[in-house]
Length: 255
Image (cartoon, rainbow, N blue to C red; front, side, top):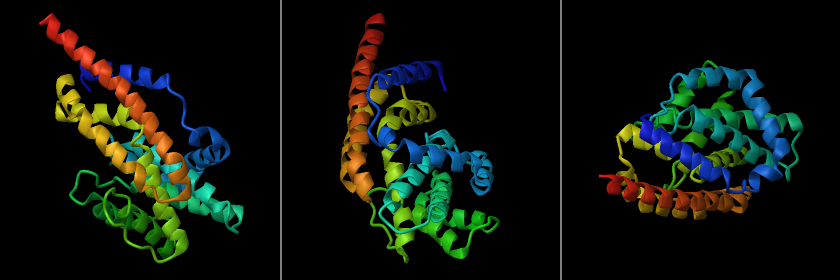
């Protein structure tokens, strides 16, 4: 990442640090801790993480940083949604593991056309060498296939597969909040060689996309907490936008 973009990203992180943490991350501390333990300790997840870490590209802001956050949030959403159902703890943890796998793999073909479909097929191929059943592999495939925004999702054949599919979608869209302005934006700008002025020109379009996502959450938990996550990002984005405008004005005056 070039020096100017790095400086702007650091400033964006500083701005974001002044804003409150969305309630989702303060209310569900226990399942977040469980999800993180499974992410870093479950043998199947660890094995998959080692594979995708060498494959995922950070250039567009959808590398291992993004996939880690999506994975953990997906597992937490699964835990929360399962609390009203009659399942044993071990069964819930197994579904959380499937959510972690789906999160790790969901952008494995990010730079291809129709990346959700392509990524789902690649996930099936990789999972052949993993200790998962055919139905569990189909669950991961279905979730990845359905994670793209502004498309009609394919119906899943079992309720628990539908649940994981919906949780992956919502956890991926959580990232349109704070992460957009502290991580994704700067990696995309660096990859595309955008100047600060070009970033400013694209800012209103990016903000409008976030607002469109707010009405698309698929789980009850996502619909309850997702809007706040996105609006926290929007408020951070507004402040970063003002900072960028001042930065561009000062740069022009220096010339």
